[in-house]
Image 1: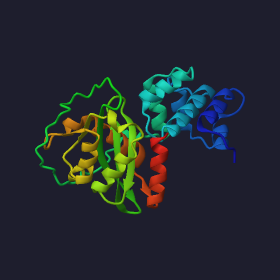
Image 2: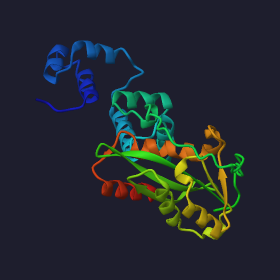
Image 3: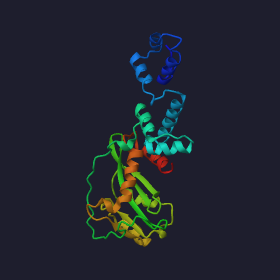
Image 4: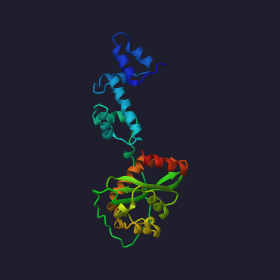
Length: 266
């Protein structure tokens, strides 16, 4: 049996058609005559070394992105390598090679949460463009599958540059998970002016209140039933669900912690 990729076989047959019977070469290389006819009469699709090289670059970029990049981002990465290719061509190659970005797949069902009805205003007021680092911290929780059971992660985001400045994982969706995440913040808490979250009940806790009071940090809550008030955190968690947790089942909690550390510091 002769081992070669499909494009190479097509090129061999077409290049030697004047010397050898096409039917014999098709049989030898295990290529149907209809496939050869299709390739021969579709000039827009060239089976050559350049195409194979481009395909390998696309596969490498896609793999390094953890299966997240679509044609637009792959085009940008190719350009950095000095390779120019249209999005249409990239999409075709991705389709032919089964490269489907995780962003194109519906990801998660909605988990119900208990609402915090405290009379605390939205001090952020959707002012998502901050000019000072560590002035506003956003937080939210999401869930991941660990050995068939839901575990949770909590992140602290600096609204200035969307940097993850604190994080933790836990087996329970509770206030202790939030408290531990706050303690991992690697910057001076005295710089923080606003701590903004949605109205999840896990953010309602006396210990958290004491931390905020100690550092004179104002608490800010989204309006009830209004995810747009915490849009940056929601968007960031969508990215994390897609890049880190989508379609994954962690073997145990220790693996989750290791992988989360690797992801945050990637």
